[in-house]
Image (tube, rainbow, N blue to C red; front, side, top):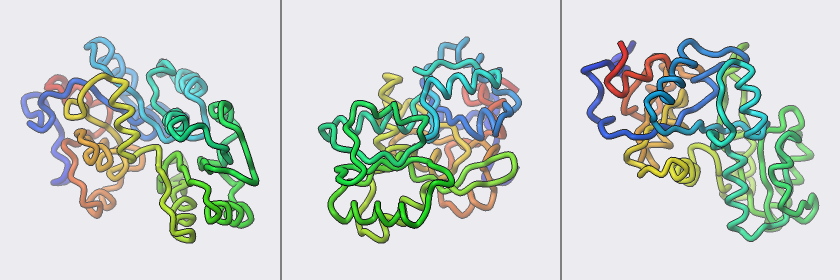
Length: 274
């Protein structure tokens, strides 16, 4: 533990977390990495359910529907319901409805295209371009097409703007590099739907029926999870697993409201556990 990381303990729970009545929980890097659950994940979920503490899992995953994601996580041994997940695609649908169901170019994984079935698709005259993770399908020609369509007036909607995430073999580049590149060359600003968007946190907190000041966000990303939540009026708790790196935390300028070594220490935020 570094000086930045006073572990929340029974009798020593940070005052900043007093009055917390609901939680938002990151998934990848906190409850699992790759295809492996992290120690304490099942017990932490059981603690929340037994204690009647309202929670939602929040994720910027753009390659799975909520149903599919719940099934995949269930196969790892963590039983959750699709309705307990607030995903970036789910939030994007709500945003696009507010725009009046525009013609969309979906630059997203085939696995989530059905999520946007209510919107008319157009690859050549879109009113909105929705960007998610498409893996190795990114290339210069695609980026150039999107550049031209944005210059012609299409809105840029990013399911998130993540920089990277943790895989078993190491860190992997995320879609934020493409979103930022398109913003740079067009001079336009993307509407970012996923974390760390304040709108995303507003929506997620709304599903808990709790005011923001009574909700804490737990995650391994100091900027997206902790910083984003704090800017939206929530408390931000850093979990030092997954993509967490001490040097990144130090350089971020973000001070967590509390730090946990892992999700196994979750009860300590409520003054219980060891």
